[in-house]
Amino acid sequence: MRESQEPTTAVATATPATATEGPASPVVAPGTQFEAGGAIPPVAQVPAPEGRPTASELAYGGEQGAIQDAFAGAPKPHPEQSKYRLSGPTSFGFNTPDVAQWPAQLTTFLSDQFGVDRARLGVKRFGAGKSGDFVFGVFLDAQNLGVLKIYRDPAGAGVDAEILHVVDAADMPHYQPAEEKGSIGSVTIDGAAGSSLFTELVPGRSIEALIQGTPQGMERAAHLDMLERATRNAAVMFAELHTTMASGKQVDATHKQNEAKFIMTKFGMVRSKNDSKHFTTGETLDRIERTLWDQIIPKFVASPLPATAYHGDAHAGNVVVDEQLNARPIDLTAMKWSLDGENQGKQTGAVDVGQFIARLHEKSEGALDGAEIQRLEHAFLDEYFRHSTVAEADMRAGMVLYAVESQFARIAYDIGEPQNALAAATHLLGLA
Image (cartoon, rainbow, N blue to C red):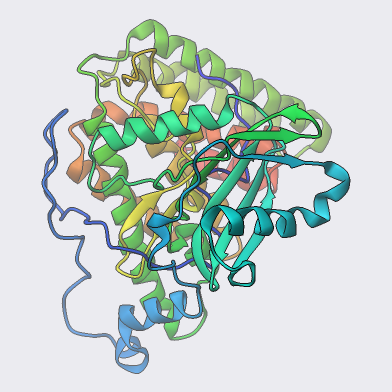
């Protein structure tokens, strides 16, 4: 059974919406099949659609014009960012009364570690997650050097570093998280032991940021074309993870039954929320519950699903693309729940697929209309199953179950309007 996870807002591999492109990572072409458990040869990225330019493309510059606008003004990664690392018997203490001074204090500390003039270095706090961890962006000459995450858990950095090592050892050309760049040897927070991890700041824009930046007018059509290609490349990335990390075993029926029971505890939380907020009728909730227990869950339990690793928090905000629209993942912390004691995959890729398509609704609110969201949803599924070794028919029930779970979590944890989450759930179940 998976641990209950609330959405997080700060992670070791986080990237701000203002970061930009880095070295291109290849993305495979439509129709290429992955060999189960084998290496995947680098091939061409998903190409832009061919054909005669539309009137809006002639007037605006097409997809390339959309890309130039979307990435304009974002800071560049430092050309020598890989050589700036943290190592050795260093120490740093964070004291809450000095919180406003932390960036300045880290600037002094890091300028000594890197051997650069303090005036050239900048540190910016990105925010704090629900765990209470701290995340800082580090910049040299106003160009990205990396991300420093400070964990309250003394073992937290080690867990994230191990995940990065597991992924690196799998040698996946298209699923490339941030490069690890060391750590501060000893960290304390108000005198208590913590831990730290310094990583590359994955360059580019998150797909969520691109969605939220969707323009009106004649530019919109070209921007949507760009979003579709970015979404397709994200699907290729996840398909590679699920295929490469497959253990060769199947997810057993008992595990799937436990997963279903765990998910349905969240449905109980939805009913409780409705008792106080009255965002839907009891009849609607009854229909959802019957559909899940009578149709979706039995099919999920009976489906042959390969055991593999997942990302665990797959959504448009955790996929970053560069100016060539090559996709890379960030925030891999939840991947630990999909690995066994020997770092072999034990879960199903349906978790990521369901989460991504469901959370397109959440991440697109206020930016895209229903038809545009469905366009991205269909593009993601089309591209994923072009490259997956799992048949869509085998994964569909699990995909829907995990997709609906993400909407239950939105309601349970008061993320956005419950009516919107419920509408997405009924759409995913075919009840709309």
